[in-house]
Length: 99
Image (cartoon, rainbow, N blue to C red; front, side, top):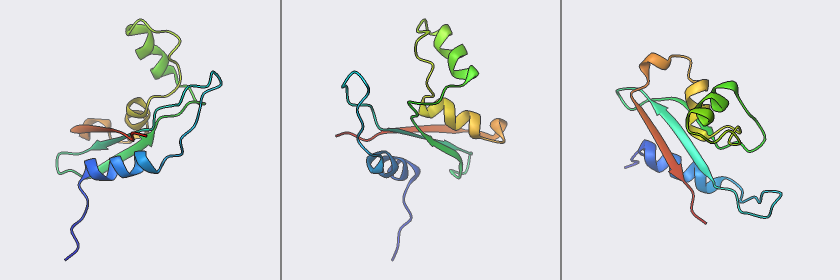
């Protein structure tokens, strides 16, 4: 019998499926994937790390954290921004695809 994947297994698989890329400085970029879930475990939104896009909310959060250079969209911020019904977010799942 087919057993559906749990949200964390789904997020880990999505992170592992992302291509391994290097930054202009030669460092390997992290493969991170985030999911916003409602109280019943349904996926409301999902997003990977993005190293080419920025967002005003990401800049605001990075300033609060004291790291103004971290303007590129983190997976968790992107998933929250993409969610149409932010009040329904119950859980945030973040997975890292290790090399």
